[in-house]
Amino acid sequence: MLPLVALVGRPNVGKSTLFNALTRTRDALVHDEPGVTRDRNYGVCRLLPERPFVLVDTGGIAGEDEGLAGATARQSRAAAEEADLVLFVVDGREGASALDDEILAWLRKLSKPTLLIVNKSDGIDQRAAVAEFARYGFADALAVSSAHRTGIDAVLARAMALLPEEGTAETLDEDPGRIRIAFVGRPNVGKSTLVNRILGEERMIASEVPGTTRDSIAVDLERDGRKYRLVDTAGLRRRSKVDEAVEKFSVVKTLQAIEQCQVAVLLLDASEGVTDQDATVLGAVLDAGRALVIALNKWDGRSDYERQQAEALASRKLGFVDWAERVRISALHGSGLRELFKAVHRAHASATHAFSTADVTRAVEAAYAANPPPVVRGHVAKLRFAHPGGDTPPTFVVHGTRLKTLSPTYHRYLENFFRKRFKLVGTPIRFVFKEGANPYEGKKNVLSERQVAKKRRLLRHVKRD
Image 1 (spheres, rainbow, N blue to C red):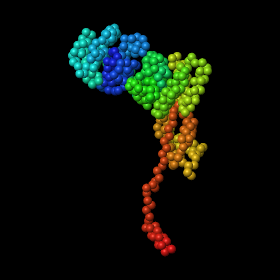
Image 2 (cartoon, rainbow, N blue to C red):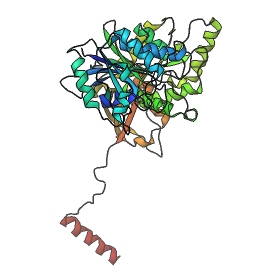
Image 3 (tube, rainbow, N blue to C red):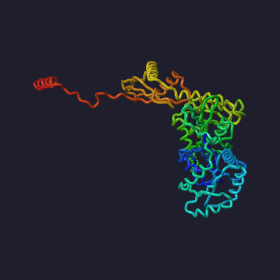
C-alpha cells in the first residue's frame, strides 16, 4: 500500500503534463485546451525507487456544480479527499485568479497537507511568479515547468518530507490471473455507467453528453473470488468523423486498450440497433483478434416488439460474428450483469485454452477425412500435421503441400470444425498454413562415373543411327 498524491487545480494549468513528468509516462492526455482531463487517472511515480507513491491526475475544477463540469469537479474533490498529500497546481504565467482562491479555500477546509506548485514558470521571472501567490500563505511555493521537467527534483524532495511511509492507495498489479476486460463501443452507449455499476461507485464520469470519456481508465476489481481489470474506453467513431486533436488521442488510447485486453465487451444501444459506428468498433476488436462479448444495453423499458426488433437486427447485421455471445443488460439498473460475466468467463476460457500438438493434428486429420479439399488443376492439397501457434486468439499452424490452393470456403470449414470440436465460443480463430519445402529444389543430380560412361555410349549409338 503506497501513499497517494493528488494533483488539483483549475483547468489548463498543466496537471496532466506534471503527471506525465512525475510518472515518466504518456498515460495522461495533454492538449492546449481546458477540460481535456475528466476522470481520475492513477499512476505510480518511481523517480525515487526507495519511496514510490501513487499519483492521481484530476480534471480541472471550473467552479460549476452542474453538468459535465460539476461531475469533473466531484471527481477532483474525491481524489483530494482520499489523498495523503495534495499538489495545488497554479499557472505562473497568468497569476492568481478568483477560481484559484475558491479552490484554496476548499483545500484549507479539507485540512490535507498541501504544496503550492507554480507551473509554467519557464521563460519568466520565477521569483516574481512565486511572489504573485505570496498572499496564499504557503511557506515554500515551488516554481516548476512540467513541460520542460524543471523543478521536479524539488517537488519530490518536499513531497517525501510530507508523505507517510505507507498509505492506503493500491496500485494496478501485474497478476497474470486477472482477466483484462475492455468496455468498448461508440459514444454514449453506457460504457462508463456500466463500469460504475459493476464497481458500485461513481468511479467514471457518466453523462448523456456523447464523448464524455476521453481517456482509457483501468480499475482492478475482485468479484466472486475472481480478479479482473476493467478498462473504460472512449467511444470510437468513423475516421471521417474524427477531427478534433483530443479525440484522435482518445482513439489511439482506445485502440491500445483493445490490444492489451483479453476480452472486449462491445456495448450496443438496444434502442438504436446496430449502426455503422458499431461496425467500426467491432472491426477494431476483430483486427486485434480479441475475445468478444456483445452486450445489448438499455434493455430495460423496451416493449416486447422493440426487443424482438433489436434481436432480429442484431442477428442480421452481426451474423459474421455468430460465435460471439450476446447478452441483454441494463447498465443503469444493473440487470444482466451475472450473465455478462458468465459470457466473459466462457470467452476468456476459449481464448486462452492450451492445446496440445496431438489434439490439433487429430482435429486436422478428422476434418480432412470428413471433407477433403477440392481438386485444383489436377492436384489436391494435403494437410499433414498441425500444432498450436499461440492464444488470444487461438492460433493453429497447419503444415502440408499445395496449401495455397485452399479456398476461403475451406478456411471457414476448418474454423467451424475446430470451433465445434473444441467447443470454442466468444473468440476468433486463426490458421497459419505452411507448405513444406521441396528438399531437392535447386539441387542437381551428380552422375557417377559409371552413369557418365553409359551416357557416352548411348550418345555414340545415337550418332551412328
